[in-house]
Structures are given as C-alpha cells and as structure tokens.
Image 1 (cartoon, helix red, strand yellow):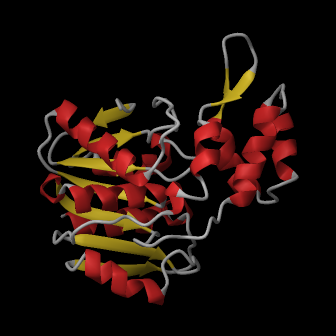
Image 2 (cartoon, helix red, strand yellow):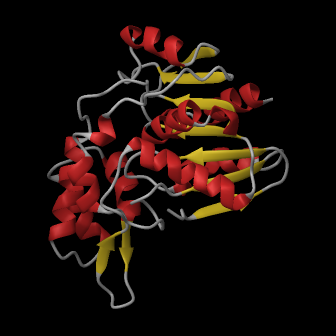
Amino acid sequence: MKLNYTDQGAGQPVILLHGMFGSLSNLGSLARELATVYRVISCDLRNHGDSPHDQRMDIPSMADDIVELLDDLGLSAVSLIGHSLGGKVGMQVALNYPSRVAKLVVADIAPVAYVPRQDAALEALRAISVLKVNNRREADSIMAMHLPEPQTRSFLLKNLMRKSDGDYSLKINMSSISDNYGTSLVAAPVGLPYSGPTLFLKGETSAYIQSKHHSKMAELFPNMKLDVMNDVGHWLHSENPVEFNRRVTDFLT
C-alpha cells in the first residue's frame, strides 16, 4: 500500500509512526526538531490520515506498508520511532526486516497482546460517523457523551474533515478499525529477535508497559533499554514534548 507521507530535513533517515486514531501530524514536534539533523519521513498508517483505506488491518500488513515506503524512497535502513500502535508496527518491521532498521524507539507499548483499551474513543467516533454533524462544536458535544476528557476529544476531532460539499466526514476508516479493533490490532508483534539498539519509553502513569512485560521485551529485543518519563501517561510525546524529544534525540545520536 502506498502510504501518505511528508519528507523534511537531510541526513540519516528517520521514520515516524503515529498511534491509533492519529495521523502524521501527531509527532510533529519531534519531526521538526529531528529535521534539523536528520531526514525525517512522517507517514499516515493505513486507514488513517490521507493514506488509502483497506479492510485488511493487521500489524504484519502495516509493517509491510512501511517497508514498501522504504523501497519506494530507496532507503536501505532507517531509524524507526513509533508511538502506541505505531510502536507495534515499528517492532514488527524490526522483527521481520531487521536489516532495514538501524535503531528502534518504541513509545509506551510492549510486544504483547492487549485487552482493547480504547472503547470510549471508538464509540465517540462511531457516534459522529453515523450522525450528520454541521460543525466541530456539534461533533464535540456528541463525543462528550462518550468521552469526558476535552483533550482526548480534541485529538480525535483532528480526524473530522469538511468535504467540498460542506458536509463533514472522518478521515479514518471506521469500518476497518471497528472490524479489527478487538483482534488483529491488539495482537502482539511476532518474529525472531531483533538485535539492534532499541529504546522503550514508558509514561510513568501509563499501564501499557508493565513489569510483567519486561521479559518479553528483552526476549524479542535483547539490545534494549527501558526509560521511564516521570509525571506523564500514555500520550507522553504530547504531555511533555521537550523531555520526549530529548530522550529520542539522545538515543539516536
């Protein structure tokens, strides 16, 4: 699949991978900082942003999309940085295609299967996808019945776009995400161990990386280190972008 992407800066190539319900702009702060030293490619994962829609949505297929992008750009090896779902995709690329990954950064996700954790967000998006909304304020009011946190709603509303006819619709492929949400999208990356340098970044108050996951992390990524960012949760890159960017930059240097 030909993914939508942006390409900025010059130097050693770095690929940025966003999380579920996101888009390439989510890691924009990191992209701008890294682009002063590196060539930074930010991409929309399949069924997100401006990338194509497809009913198939599983971690191996999404990893293959990234390798196809590398081939199209003529890149033999890159550093991969992924948050949440993007971190799973990055791990799968490293496990399946180790020679294509120079370094790997995984933000607040582990190589394990999860119980679905985004039910409220999915229901909020479903609500505005089946109802005709006239503006963003109306969409926000509908989503508030499912999601009380305004910051989360603001993030999700970035998926709402106004079409040329004036109507609003979602950029993400709600059908595919809904169908795969509780199965392939929460599955664990699998493969032979990746021996390259790997950084796991955990948000201190997030439950996505737990002590019981450490053995699997070390098994699949034996050259890994785990850093904890204090006073942040799962959205560590947006809760403290200065510290997040510093940790990533230090690791890549």
